[in-house]
Length: 208
Image (tube, rainbow, N blue to C red):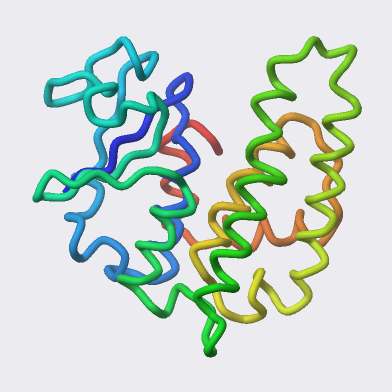
C-alpha cells in the first residue's frame, strides 16, 4: 500500500510527521502492514496538475485533489486525515484510548483538531497579515482548549494516541509562525520532539 502526501517547500507534511511520530513512540506497529516509509509517495507541486513519484497524476488517485490519500494493494483509496489516522489506530490499538467509548473519543478528538484548528490555517495563511488577527485568536482559543487536556502528558492522559502527532505537528507549525502558545502546549511539543529518532528526522528534513 502507498500513502500519498505532498511536500511543502521541502518540509514534511503533517501526515508524514504524524505517522513518523507514531512509529517512533510505538516502533514497528503502525507500519508493519504498510511497508514503512517506503510506502510514502510525494506529490510534486500542485496535486491536481502534477505527476507523483512512480508515475501517474494525483488527481487520478484522489479526485478531491488534496492530500493525504492511502492507496491499498487492492486499489481501494482512503482519504481524509481523520479516516486515515483512525485506520492506523485500528491496526495498532495501543495508539487509541481504551474503554467502550475509546474509539469514539478518538474520532471526536481527531474531528475537533481537523475542524477547529487545522482547517483554520489555510484561511489564516491566505489572508493579508493586517487582517489575520481574528482568525489567529480563534486558532489560539482552540489551542488553549487542547492544552487543558495535557495535564497527564497527552490528549488522553498517559496514553500516546494517533491524535497526539496530529496536534503536535499543528502546534509546532503554529509556534514557528509566531503564535504564543500556552505553556502546557509548548512543553508537549518539547516532549514529543525529545526522542533521538524524532530529532534525527527533524534534522534530516531541515526542521531542527
